[in-house]
Structures are given as C-alpha cells and as structure tokens.
Length: 354
Ligand SMILES: *Cc1c(COP(=O)(O)O)cnc(C)c1O
Image (tube, rainbow, N blue to C red; front, side):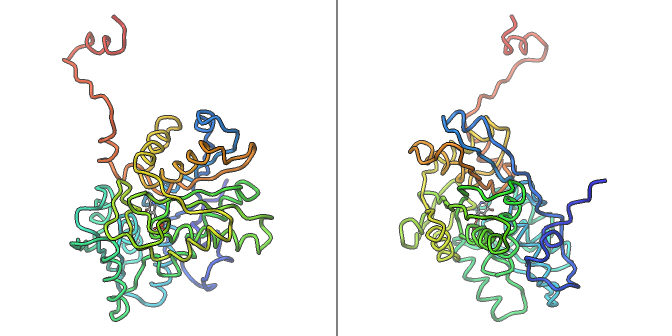
C-alpha cells in the first residue's frame, strides 16, 4: 500500500528547523499536484513544458498552510496560548484552521470589507476572533506586529521566519517531481513572503546537491498594487486580486534579492491581464484558482507574447489559492444566464435540437 503523505514537516524534516521530538500540528498540507498545462502553451504558440503548482489543493485552499503548519507547531511547542495575524484573507483562514487543530485562540485582523467571502467563512467556521480594521492590510500588519512584541500572542504572519521556512518546501516538491529545477518559476507577489521562501527553497536544495542549476524567479504584482516595481510604497493599493492588494510588502528586500540573484525580475500587470489568465485557466485547463493566483500565468502570457521563452524550457507557475475562495469575482465575469420555462422543449431549444 502507498504510504499516506505525512505533511511537509514529516516529509522534509531534515530541511526544517524542528527538533527530533517535535510533534507537528498538521492538516497534511503540501504534496500538491504539479499539473502539466498543454492547451495554454498551444494557444499561446509556444513550445515550453508548462506546469501549474496547484496550491489551492492545500487543506485550507492556499499555500499559506505550508508556512502555517510550521509556525503553529513552533508557537505551540514554545507554549503559546494565542495566535494573531493580519491578513488579506488566506493567512487568517489558515491560522484559524491550524489554531483550531492545536487548541489555540486565534485573533485575525483584516481590512474591513476587503476580504473574499470564502476566506471570511473559513475564519468564522474555525472560531477565530475576526477583527475588521477600518484601514488597509499594511496598517493591520503594523498593529499586530506591535501587539505581538509586547503581549503574549504569537505572530503568524510571514514576518515570522517559521512561515518562510515552511513555505520553501514548495520548491523542494517541484524539483522532486520534475527531477530537476525548472527554467523559470512565476508567482504572484503581495507581501512577498512566498517569492522569498521559494527562492530560499531552491538555493537550499541546490546546496544539498538535489539539483544542478537555479531557476529564474519572476514575481508578478498587480499594476494598482506594485510598490516593488515602482520602487516606492503605494498608499492606496487597488486591484481585483485581493490577496496581493498590498502597498508596503514586508519581504520587499527578499523579493528584490530573489529576482536579482536568480536573474529574474518583478513585473506588474493590469487587472485585465490577470483576469484574462484567471479565465483562461478555468476554460482551457479546468483549473479554478483565485484571481491573485492567476497573476503568475499572466506573467507567463506576457513572456510568451514578447517571445521571451526558448523552445523546450520548463516553466512552473504557482497557483497560490483556490477559486472557490472568491465566488463573487467568479460570478462577475461575463457569462450567460439562461432561464427557461419548465419542460423539455425549451431546454432542447437551448441545446440546438429543434
Ligand atoms: C498570500 C497570497 C499571495 C501573496 O503571497 P505573498 O507571500 O504575500 O507575496 C498570493 N496569492 C494568494 C492566493 C495568497 O493567499
């Protein structure tokens, strides 16, 4: 019988800062599919091996679980009784679930009215205390950082180094699956923890002799929330991709370092381009991710249109979260609503059988 996937801490124990007796707080996260995409490269007219790392298949529907299992495990081990985080949604969903699993109290501070419905539902169901702040994510993060410095609540945002340690395992999985490093790795950039962690993962795996070269990292921001690309803080970040609506990323330097060391870059694309990729994934490949996640594919499309890929290159894009998180954006994409009277006739007519 095939052994159950044990979660990222057990699977990659040797690469993680845990003690031999550490008992993971886990929901068996990680081990997500690296799905080959064939119709999209064909449509774009490029001959690359394109893969999507489907992080929406983590237990709470986003990559945040990789970092959260380690952050909560370590906080629990240190005797924490409560967790706190600021969130654009997925961090709170993940903290709420892992906190529940460990029997810890969880406080989440979110920008009022700016959270996708599915994420809020998760925080509520796992019984966290949801505090809606009349401000932006960046302000929420400032508040929870200050509180955690002076009060006995453990901060589980990605400024907590354990989060990044856990999140780096996505790169291990990609290399283990491919048997080598990809040529390029595209991913959305919000608070920039994920690109920082993914780059750290690749570097460590290379040091361990698990791969020969390093991929080029391409981070994609939304045009209305692109502080790294613009080189200055964005006071009022705005984008449909709510998970990356961040004006002052905590891991700004980490993102710059990942881009420059890997000979990659951070780019910005419009909401229109992000939504184009969002629809393309769903319609061409059967993959439903949330809008922010599609920024990675939007980056691939941008490269393809500019003739940046060489034939035979291996390209991975991280799809960071599940599409069901944000049903409102999905339902606001143009689609036909067909209403008919009861009975077979009207349905047959729609089908084109007269
Ligand atoms: C958190 C998140 C991001 C952004 O990741 P950062 O580490 O903040 O750059 C992108 N997409 C989704 C779905 C997320 O939840």
